[in-house]
Image 1 (tube, rainbow, N blue to C red):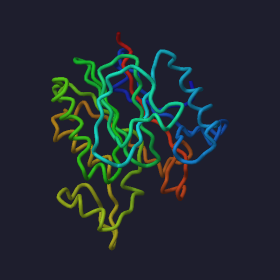
Image 2 (image 1 turned 135 degrees about the vertical axis):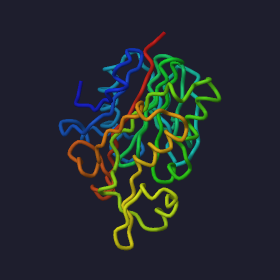
Image 3 (image 1 turned 30 degrees about the horizontal axis):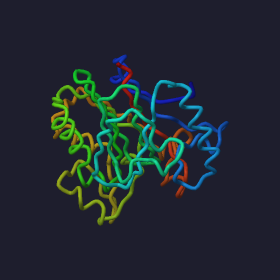
Length: 252
């Protein structure tokens, strides 16, 4: 398998498969996996096929991410958005399923990917949280949806906050930072700018939703600092590459 990032806490469970892809300069556009960014689709599809070969039993699910707080429960075991972006789940930034052999995916290049797993109920979720989705409390709402729809106890959820842009590099203006002023620990003010900590804010949302601190693992990897391994829209000044965070159930 190519170089990937994995969480220690999620890796404990054999019924849960997860990984976060990394760049690979030997592949088309450094192993970008995004079909929506106007790269050569044949190159991206070749990358996806290479990845899928590692999980032949899995049906991959891709959403058309829109920085919303829209959550979709995936109920059918069939591929969506993998070979053709027109079949992706529309206008959605969080996916939940209890179905085996489905791989939920998130594409990012600085935004925060969050992977959730309840080992007692065998429920998984993949969440995309940029600043706008974070403002809309998408992580908090997703945990609540897991609770409402599947009876998940948040205390049982194992969470991984994947590589994303860190406080060290995410400079924003007041128009963005003001949405997070209620938590002074979520930013550092530098002159008239703010260094925003999206991984921390999403961690706080998980805690607020009832997830235990000991069950939350942060990668502590900044995509802008580690641009050799991860795509960074900020660092690469509008790059069209995306890496993929994914989670699937292998039970059943």
